[in-house]
Length: 305
Image (cartoon, rainbow, N blue to C red; front, side, top):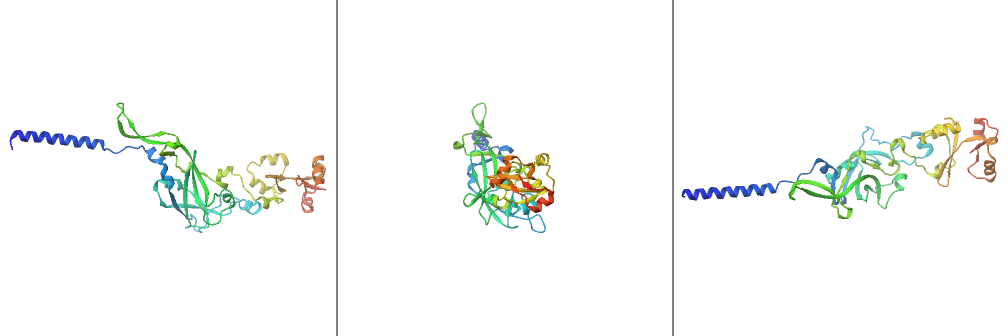
């Protein structure tokens, strides 16, 4: 091989190497920030489901009640009838795992498996538990066929993932999330942290501000002591101020036209003429206390009003 041929070969090899280098540069992988990797999901991923299994953190194998109402449960019948158990991820799309981390479900005991499916709405991601045996009353009320909503996450926005362009209008390897109308989107942004999750049913509110749900036919006409009432009602200062009710005083629960009325015992002489009219007509907003309560409170004629 002549020197001229050797020089030509070097040139060709150099050009070939340059072509390979350019080709490799174009094939560099896309770059997604940590935020995109953690909080942006393909819409199609939520067409799948995951399997979770309950376990017990207590040696007894027992769960916990959804609200702390030991005495209230027996006397006012709050509707959290089953115990709560934490769950562990068993199978399904790993990208959906964050949505069930730290999740607690009502169950009959540990090692019970549930299928969790998902649905995207305009503003929320809703998680559903497939029907598996009897449900507590508060979940039965929101059941939809064979599915029961158990939690939801608010959506940030719908959109697409696209490569960022440089000043020359050329695509770079950096990927961005761009907001689009839901119908034109392939992805959705959701903060999947546990703190962003809201439970459904009785647990829909924060523990400290939870409203207690009760069965109407089990509480109507029921007489309980004042301290039980104070457990039921978080903001009970108004009762103390307006009625002077003491913890051992009896009160009557009256479910009337979709509302719960608290009837406080009082002497007949303290009734207004309107209230006396209710009593004469048999209106259940005014009721006789009975001899036992009348004797306990020392009224000559005791009335619940």
